[in-house]
Image (cartoon, rainbow, N blue to C red; front, side, top):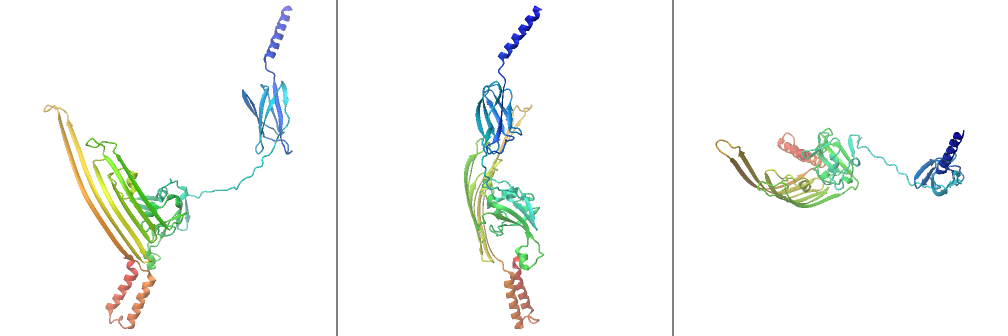
Length: 426
């Protein structure tokens, strides 16, 4: 009996010591409500922060929250709700259940600005017989030309210096419906800024020859129209570049070849006048006349070296609607040098212990190529001069030279009519 009493006493002492070693059990609860009297706030976030822990509760349908087993006697509460001004409170807790006063949150007035809905047009669309590309769907870099847009369009390709659409060559490029860059289909793409292009329209049209003949069923050509933001009346492009360096690899003579390139160009485009002047010199084995092409890639190395100097100028001037004067001059001075070294080393044999063979070949070529061209073109309109021919024919008929008595003059009048009305088609 005494043994059982001792065991009960030891168990009671151990339980009392264990209870004294444990921290007191604390809980914290409260309610979050609208300060304007709209009732409890459902779904408000309540964050309990202590030095060793952070707990989160969401208020229920009554706006109430409760934290169980709070260990610290001093905690911080952060209460927030969407559209309401949050608050932070420091709360002291004791053993048992701790209830704080109702937390009231005030609503924050929110004013929304203008709502703008932005959409994006598809890359391609069709308007009747016209295919329209929307340029904003093609990524370009600052300083890029319109040619970079064309490179990223489906159905368009650059081949042998030409722009082709579905296999058909683009024969003319307009800017806002006007021949701002002349008759060369590449000029507008090479010099017009890419970020100025809004749409690219591709369609077929009758050439001037067919329109002058009045032949509505004539063969059509494929053209391109660039719709721009700025609606330019003219375009001026000036470039000047220079550079110097050396080959990474050593040449046959064991030295690194020095490389240089320098050039400048000026281009002016409008509906009535087109001027172009350029000058460049390099030993980079480049053959393009565009300065950007010269410095975009290096074509040196190999067995030789070529030095070239080119000068060029061109002009096109339209006088009225019918007369066009165009001319160009170009001078090219090219010098090429080639050096090739061949070395053969033979394995030893009974006839010799060592044998080697070295061959060096050098060649040089100098060429000068001046060229000039001047063209004066007159394109009459059909109504004007055909009426003149008709009046002349009627006049000759009146004086009696057209019937059977003067077949030569009749033929002369017909030839004159063809020359005036159809000379543009020859």
